Length: 457
Image 1 (cartoon, rainbow, N blue to C red):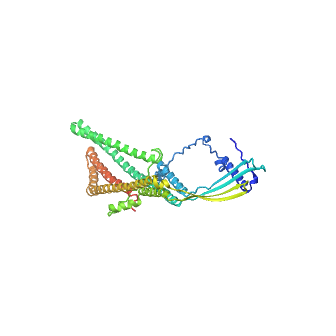
Image 2: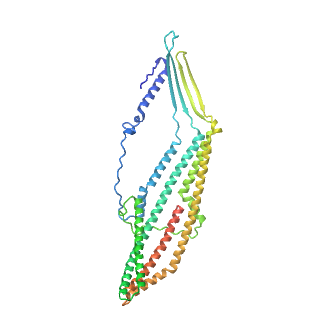
Image 3: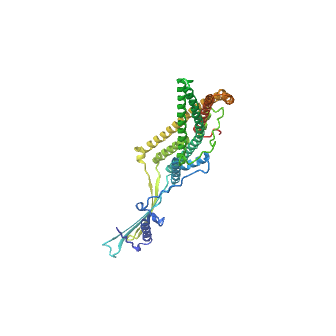
């Protein structure tokens, strides 16, 4: 489709300006986005699908430490990457909130013949109009505030996810160390129960052991095998979980010895009120809820302020009439008249309801943190009492059992079954000590995770 514009240069400056404006508009319409980026293809149908490059497998240099695992997990976790992208989107939206509308330029030229015109000249009527939109501060200020609060909420989401991942990686390393020790103790129990069962079977063949003794030894042997299998399963499951965070195969890394750092116990005077004050300040997820509540309130103010009349744009123009030989300039204003916003529209009511919902969600988030703190402090206190009781009552017995076992091994003519049984009891007690200490350490990790800040701070 083609069109022709007839320009009469006898119209003076207005006609020439009109011609330049029409030429610029036509050139811009033909150029489009390609004019801003020469050689770039903006046709989606002609764009080739993106090529996904498979990265080379990652392997740590030497045994894997907590710091290496955390850095790798932050770089590989899909949710962290999505939250980083969300932060960038919120940032650009905050910057775009202060964008201004482009001015508008209109140009018209109409030419028609007049039969009664004795001179035979054509009738030319040209008009140029410029419109400058004026930003409405009653709308822009709350809009900028809302987008700024959204940006802060997105950053808080990323910070909260990073903290949780850091806590989970640290606890998983400590759990792997615990499971490694548990696996070693379970292997010792299997070995010792095998020795006891072999000795009982030999005595039963000689008539020196009862069927009840044989059944008891067999059951303990089966139980030790099952405990060893369960410990192996727990250890492999923990390695698979860590490997999934690192985006590597479970067999592609070796853990550093004693790489996990257990949180320091909190101060004895850590009360619930002090812990709650720390969590309210440190928990980024609570901060994100507060920022979103503030964004919802600002959005409500933006919608409500639409009821305030404001100058929409300033207009100015120039008219040229060649027949009447009269040039006319004019200036005008366009004003919003919020008749429906005053009377029947419900956008402000909907925005107010959203603001109330955001406030309820922030309150519910604080209530959930209070409950989590109650549970974490109670669990820590319970496991601390168990550990204290164990260290007071059982730890001295462990030292005595070590001495007794050493003396039994030095005793001449002692039966191997007796040595195995004594060592079996010692290993079971050591395994109980390991479990008790891990429960306390696990409670420390959970409390630190709930507080949102390291316990030593």
